[in-house]
Length: 190
Image (cartoon, rainbow, N blue to C red; front, side):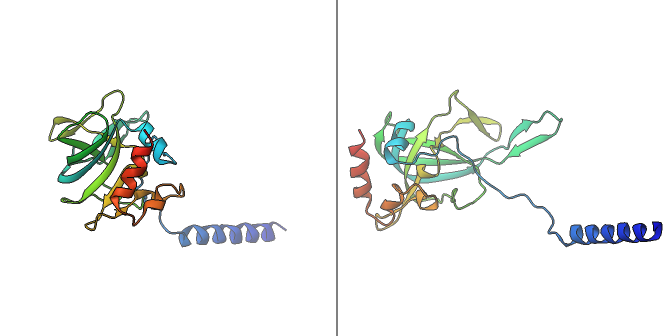
């Protein structure tokens, strides 16, 4: 009897080791998370402190944001600061340009900005004011209100909404439409 039990235990051990070795190694998956995830244009505009149309003029790699964890280790968040020259302000204080914070990992909900591209941006100012750093110098940067806060304007003035990457529906109805149609909807939300 002890021999059979030993054989069974040995077989179980071999199966467990085989299963563990057959698994793919773990690798981190980049992701971006937002404090807000508005489901309508009205909600996005209500959350936003600033709604603008602008053109990307500069993309800079910021200093990593380092968070000390309770176990003594560190969590590092890569930082990118996007400078946008403002063409039109729909909500908020008019200004010539704005800096926008972005985590540089590229995901479906966090597409990469490119120099020269135009965007309709729904932005919120961090509260309390949060400074990011570029080469040790502080930069006050805004955040998009969620993936819906970053809407690419194509060369033909048609919109590529960031909301086509989620299920909210209202933003995605403007996918491929002219900017003027989106502007009309923004104006209605006053």
